[in-house]
Amino acid sequence: MKLVQIDWVDSCSAAAGHPWCHIDEVKPASVKCQSVGWLLHDDKESKTVIAHLSYGNHDGSLRQSAGDMTIPTRAITKLVVLRK
Image 1 (cartoon, rainbow, N blue to C red):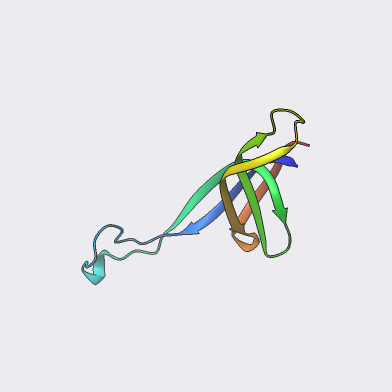
Image 2: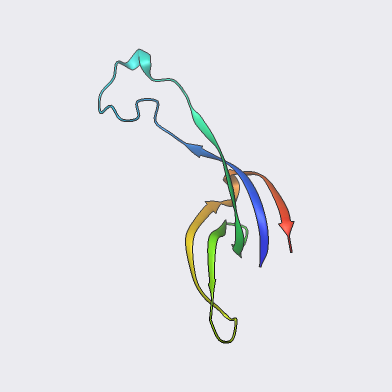
C-alpha cells in the first residue's frame, strides 16, 4: 500500500450546532480538509485511506486496521504519494 496525503473539500453547515438561525446568517461554506494514511482503495468513485495498521506477531502479516476514511474522488483537490 502507498502512504498518501489527500487534500479534499467537504460540505458543512453555516449554522452548525444551532438548529435554527436567521436566514441572513446562512452563508455558503465549504471546509478544506487533509487526510494522511495508507491507500487501501482507489477507483474513479472513491479513495479509502487508513491511519493505523496492525501486523501479526509471528508472521508479520497485516491483521487489522483502524481510522479509515473514504473520500469521494470528486471531492479531492490534490493527492500526493508520500511513500510507496
